[in-house]
Length: 127
Image (cartoon, rainbow, N blue to C red; front, side, top):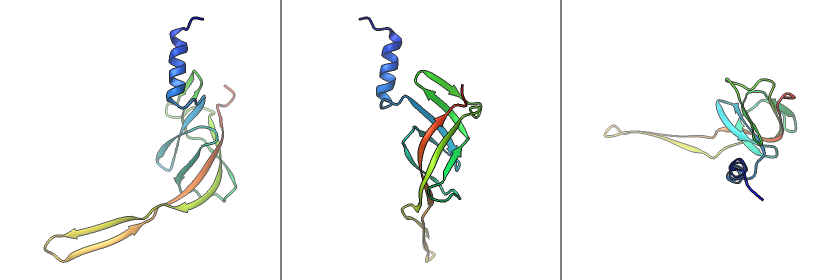
């Protein structure tokens, strides 16, 4: 049995990426997320009800085994279907302001709202 260098590269690529065969990079809420089917991600709050299915159409990259599709800026006809699992609020971040020798101190907290999504499928538009 002989191995081609491409077999070794593809195998090591799969091992490095945890054996994933298909994944995509999507943008939502001003951030980018690498997702594959079955993943759960927390994104900026979306105005969708729990249990609804949504379509993320801003797909920047799709990798399916050895096939890589890079968008300029988006991949045409690509979509990621996700289901809304729930909504929540993140951990509190403390904001503290102080001016020395002024008796000026302000303390505030902030909890960012998020929506948890479960990725159901990654579609490439029949290509």
